[in-house]
Image 1 (cartoon, rainbow, N blue to C red):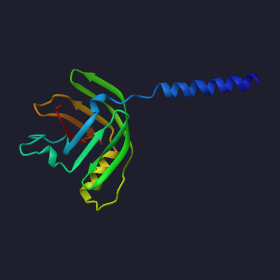
Image 2 (image 1 turned 120 degrees about the vertical axis):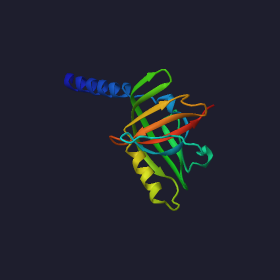
Image 3 (image 1 turned 180 degrees about the horizontal axis):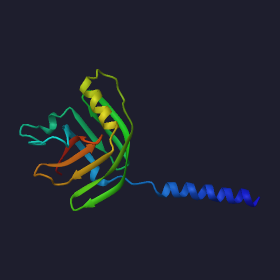
Image 4 (image 1 turned 135 degrees about the vertical axis):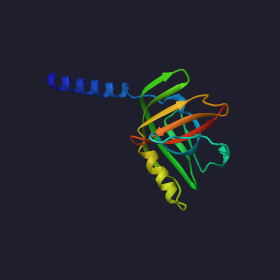
Length: 159
């Protein structure tokens, strides 16, 4: 009986500890982000958001919600999924950490281009993120790194 009680207590302690370690979403990610493009740390970039970029014309827009869900459009696809962030670092108007995307899938099935498929694949492999709030007069910046050198770059309109 004592062994059963002890095992029950240990199982409850492990379960409570696992729940306690659950990381809350970084509120810096909350909001709608428009995709700008893929970039590589190994190459020089002249401009991230070049003149002529139109936020409203972006074919890929994702919204990170405080409840750790993601919704959005990938061209004609309606997307939904989940994210978890951890190891957050905040310094001034910058926030970064690790990110894991799960169950990021289309809720409808229109035609998908190769670019749509590549974007989804890269986003699902997300490893880390970096948000710069008030990076420019118009936008906040979000980079989502999906391998050692490459990242997806997004902007969010200022409120």
